[in-house]
Length: 212
Image (cartoon, rainbow, N blue to C red):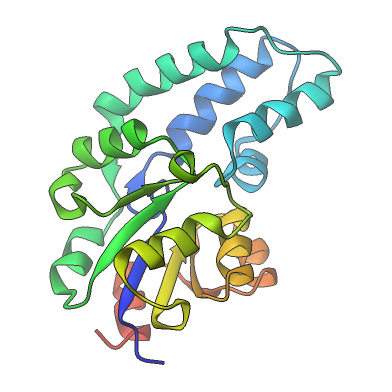
């Protein structure tokens, strides 16, 4: 296929945030009796709506989390993101070589996407090309956010590829009819392959796969 547009996920694809966000969530949930290894958090939580993550925790501990849990999590993670977020290795050089349109489509709120891109030094590359599940009320693994991004960018599904690092994200892309490339991080390889992703482990490798 001739790739005419690239749709990037944000966390774990453009910016290195997954360890930060999952670490804070696990530490807070541990105070309420929830136990999970970081590797399992990558597999269960990455790419999902935050409320789905909270529901998973509540089912495991068999009780409701405090009403202010989400607010506290967002405050703590935002503070950490302001100082700790970095661009994924190789993404800046990869984007610099692109001669086709690209955008970001994420399950996170727009202000979170913008903050992470800004701290990582990538925001100027994505102005007016940021699409959030909160804008349309549809979250991965539903394909809505990718279909919305393709439409807003002016392309058909078959002209776009999706770059993802989560099981929910790959499932969303594949079910929407997209060709999906899965960014291997050591935790997600098997899950992403099983959902139908074409795997790569660096942006140099993705450049070769796409013959950029």
